[in-house]
Image 1 (spheres, each protein chain N blue to C red):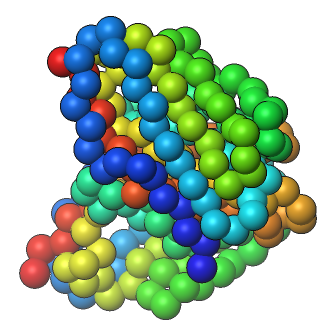
Image 2 (cartoon, rainbow over the protein chains, first blue to last red; image 1 turned 180 degrees about the vertical axis):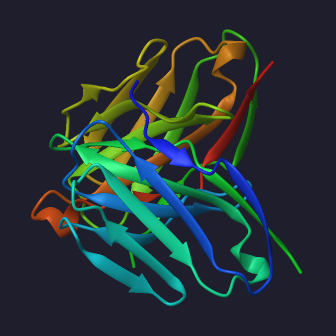
Length: 110
Length: 115
């Protein structure tokens, strides 16, 4: 099945640093979602984006729906140790179906 | 808050056994989904259902079937478990009306090991 290109695949950062990750696709999406998954758990929704150009924040997290509708970005400001996990993007295609990115594994060094 | 629950967090089964994975959501969502998650492959859609008794194949339906007899419950069935079905299984649900209602919410996952 189709997947989104998500980058970077993994990153180590120092506590307090800002983090950026993105997803790109050759297809246009009308909804973008960002999830975080802790080891052994299901993904938890962080931010949902519904309009091209939309910029939405959730605490230290900010996500943007790209103008072209083919990409989305997630930024985490002032990272803390509990930000460790895998971050997934998902783009909605068709009426019901989402396509998921391969994930960005984030490790925060205290 | 949306709550999606899965019947088991961990399961160990033998090759050839019939396996049932249950998922229940408490938000009256029309849509329910089953994914499997494997390292390096991300989330892959097995089946989804947009209404009671309705089902659609996802990207990897082979070896699986599903049942949706009640709106809140969506079951994934492995008719004859095989070792290549060892995986993390994730259930999700979403509402149907309006773009903002179509956000998918996930359960905690069932980690299945087939020996």
